[in-house]
Image (tube, rainbow, N blue to C red; front, top):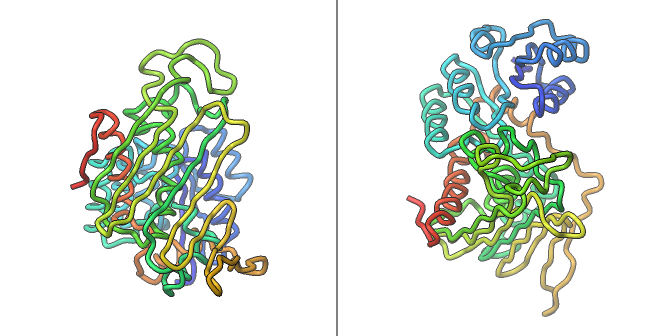
Length: 345
C-alpha cells in the first residue's frame, strides 16, 4: 500500500483533517461522519466523498477504511477511539488524549491490544521550528535542559463555547489548561526530552466565566453546570532529572494583547518558540544562532501519521506518550483542588 484510506469523525475541527487528507500524497479521504446532515452534504460537495455516516459504529465497520481521525468533543475521544482500534483501524485523535486519566488509560490499553498506530494530534511538535530545536537538543548543542516556561493568555472574549461542552468539566475535563495548555505543555515537554514528571503545584481561577464575562457574544449568567471549569490556570511541574516547568494558560483576562510563548533554558544554549530563536555562546558572549528556515519543508502530522500506519512504526505523539501529558494536567487540577503540591504516580 502506498496510500492510507482515512475517514474523519466530526467535521468541526475535523474539516482541517479532511482538507489535509484530501491534499496529502499518501492518504485517500474515503468517508466522513457527523451528526449534522448539513456538514455531511458540504463534505460530499467539497471532497467528493460518497460514504457519509451519522453513526461512528457503522463507519468503524467499513472494511475500506484503514484509519480514523477522531475530531469530536473530549468526552467522546475514548469511546470512538477504542471502538475504531477494536475494529482494526489506526487512529489519529485530536488533543487532548481524553477528558480524564481513566479514559486515557482505556485508550492506551486498546491501542496496545490492537497493535495499530494510535497517535494524538499534537500539532506543535510537527512544525519546522520545533523540529529544528529538537534536532539541536538531540545533538547536544544546548546542553542539558533544566528549565522550561510557557504561557498562553487571551484577552476578554476568549472563552469558547460558553454553556456547551467546552465549559462543562465532566465533558471537557477542564478549561484553558486542558484546551490550549495541553498543546504548549506537550511541545515544551517533548523538546525537553520527555522527562518523567514527579510532582506538581497548581492553581486555578474562575473570575470571568461564572459572571458571564469573557465569552464573545454571550449575555447573562451561566449556571454552575454551564460553567464548571477554570478560565485561568497556572502550574509548576517538577521532573525526576531535576528540571522544572512553569506554565500558565488563560481564556480571558485583562491583557492588552494575546500572549504566547515557549522558552527552554539549557546549560549550553537556549531556545524559544513564538518568537522562534536559538541562543548560543561564542567567545564568552550570547549570540543569535537561529537558523533560517525559510526554505525548510513544513512537516505534516497527517503525512507522518499515514507513514507510521503504512510502515508499522510508532509515532512520537503516541497515545502512551501523551498519557503522561494528560497525567500532568490532571495533577494541576488535583493540586488546585487540594491547595497543595501533589505527586504523579
